[in-house]
Length: 344
Image 1 (cartoon, rainbow, N blue to C red):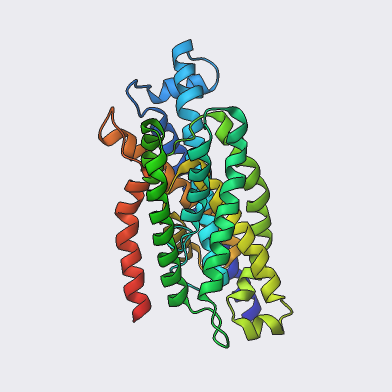
Image 2 (cartoon, rainbow, N blue to C red):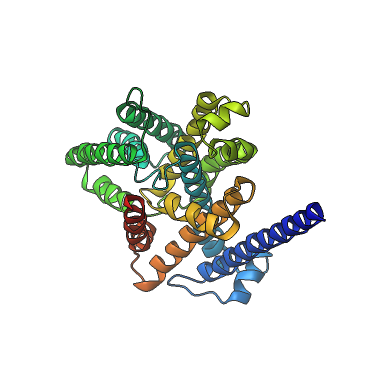
């Protein structure tokens, strides 16, 4: 009787979680259609749908397929990447405040991209595919530096020390980036200023193709480690008792997280707080089990960035507010709220 009750309860929870995931997909589709109609030239929902199926005129196809659709796809992909990176960082560090932006990993990726922009043009096709690799290297070096500075013998890494070290490293990298702006041309400086604010600047299909392979490889890899993340959340002693190779798994997951964050930042700029907000909301919606939490966080991240970019493009038409600023308006207070809870 008891086992039957548990089975029914588990099925009920699974149905609820699948319903939440389906709802998020519907919300993304609705925001997708709205975003297609956001811009100086308006397209009705019917024109959007008909153009997607090849029924629109030449102008509608140009607007949709060459200008708006690549940017929307990149916004969703970037949100998914940043959200999954944040979920992994929170899982392997057991730190509720871990996020690629707050820990300075995004800043490290940004510094690598900015160094490249300082010396080379970004208009050629070849560098586009090189940007995620450079961002990964910058993010990886930064993550290694933060890990080394945060580690204390016999104590390991505490959540608060990790956060403070990340903030300090991010501040140092930001200072270096300010110095680098002195050698930029006015044209490149304008680009960097927009990039730092979190504007989705890589808005053509070449950038989609440069980002997509990273997500196609790393998202399934991280999801395959859902059980490992569940075990790591039980604590080191329990994890070792269950046969998990803690340090090895942490290194692989950290590398995957850094890869996602670096690749995302290389085409979206400094969008912060997505990796913080999405995993927390996902846990509240579907619970702590990573089998459901990871896909829910990814969908929430994609929805948040797409919504923020749509809002930023529609409030002050024809001008734009970068998506990073819109996300920060909600993310900064949420971070302070979590910080206050952590101190308690």
